[in-house]
Image (tube, rainbow, N blue to C red; front, side, top):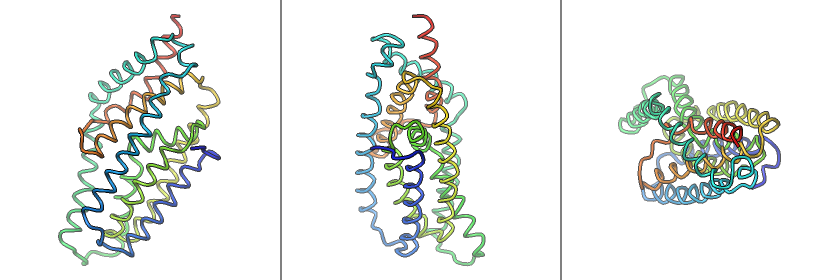
Length: 256
């Protein structure tokens, strides 16, 4: 999907969060579990489609010219291995899951107890922090925003917007108006990453961008597998691979 202008993906994402939060506040907890499961499965399948399209950048002529025709797949493999080992040593996935566990605990306590004796201000802040954490931390945030800034389309951010829309419905039904403020967090975080992508696009060769995109595509496969309950791949630990892939292209190109 054509990006139109840098930042359009973030605009779509912000609107999705605002609409989802508004609908959640109006609908409350009326969405049946079976409906949520079907929606998640559909999003998982679409994520897999976007992942395949991104991973096909491994066949980019610019990348083959830079490192050799048989090397791009090895570049991606090396990036995943080095990045994954680094991420595992840094316990990135574990730290993200720890944060997600805190968020989940908040949601479960609020949903199970149905308490209304907390101050409205505390509820507002809790909703903002909860939604901001979930909407701004994750591979789709990084991959989609960079892709938007690099001028490679907003498909990933459109997909993320769909995910965030339904998440906003669920969270707003519990936390209320505080979830609306998370749209500002999305604008700041993703806007900054998009700006970084615009800057990188002016100085990074096409081959490096192709390697980053192909590697990111495989990370999206991991996200799709998680959404479809195929396998819980530690995508968070693999995030450093996005930095390693362009570096490997530079190193290999120097020895050709």
